[in-house]
Image (tube, rainbow, N blue to C red; front, side, top):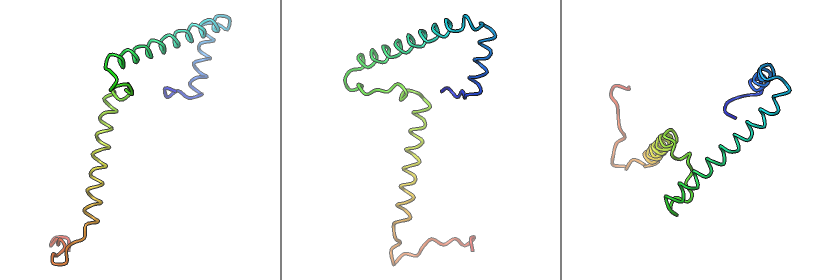
Length: 108
């Protein structure tokens, strides 16, 4: 959850109790919950409206696919897979009997 562990949550809760007091804290928690719910609803409505505007061919659109980091990672992984396939193909292709294997004078 956002890279926040149990110790960090405990510190945040402790500071919240000190700042707001134990009597006002439940009301602030309710307000934060309502705000999170309304933000989630707003984001879902925006996603659905975008899908509707783009048409049926984008019905399975995931907004995380539009993240530039995801796009770059996807293309890098595809390029690495292609390079691995080419390496495997080069290693699995036998050398014809009338051809000599490559020889490096400097390596010996």
